[in-house]
Amino acid sequence: MTSETTLHFITGLVLASTLSLLPAGCAQTLDTEAQSEPLIRGARWHHVHINTTDSAAAEAYYSAHFNAAPEPFPGVDASVKSGDAWVFFNQVERAAPTDLVTPIWHIGWGAPDPQAEFEKQKALGNNITVPLTELVGGVTRYKPGEFYYMYVESPDGTLIELNTAATDEFGHIHMYASDPFATGAWYGRYFGVRPETESAAPSSDGSPPAFPRRSLNFDQVNMIIYPERFARSLAKNGLGGLQRTTGYVNDHIGVEVADLSAALKTFREEGVEILETESELGNGVQHAFILGPDNMVIELLELEN
Image (cartoon, rainbow, N blue to C red; front, side, top):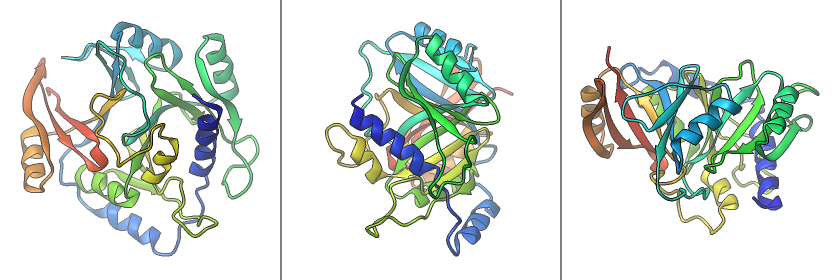
């Protein structure tokens, strides 16, 4: 990672946390979305699926460096669980591309004691790409000593943020979208994801701000959505629209549903593309794949009761 790219990451995080007061009408929008009944019953955040050349080593890495315990899951090469969130590992022959051209930027864990976490990651020899950094001042909401963050990169190339939080569990996913508001509304409409905040501070030239325009809570996971144009500034070879996540290091996300057949019926009626129809993953777990907004591949799972 170049120093210029690293600076972009730091700048992005600073801007990501400049969550100023909501503009007129936004609070009403949030309330309206929160009151809507989701079309998919019993939707819960389930997992992020990572491509790696060594699934056993990946499992060992995540369990050693983060609050994540190895736990088997049907049909998956290896997996860890943090709180109620899973990370699955799919073994591939060649290292998956890590270019920032898909709707997934990075994933993150919480750090109740950021300084101790930083020392821990250094002692473990983790690949720290952005050292512990305090976020304070300007238009941010944080006072001195309140918020810190850092970035590390896993051996498989996944970018991981560790930031001040109440728990040390898997806590967030940073995403890109062509229209963060529309993408947030999509997750709310189908899965009942609860809006938290949105950023609306204007840029100096009057153009749309390049920082999170939508923040949503999906169970223990905070989904923070950036405008696509911010991804363009980080892409190595330019970006002609967000690419489908399949085959990249962060291959897809997973959502648990109460009734997979009913969910697929609803998505078909709504015109959502079904990538793979219902099949058994193992031990009674049924799964299917759909294409979400911004080329996000989403695995739907119905777990055995």
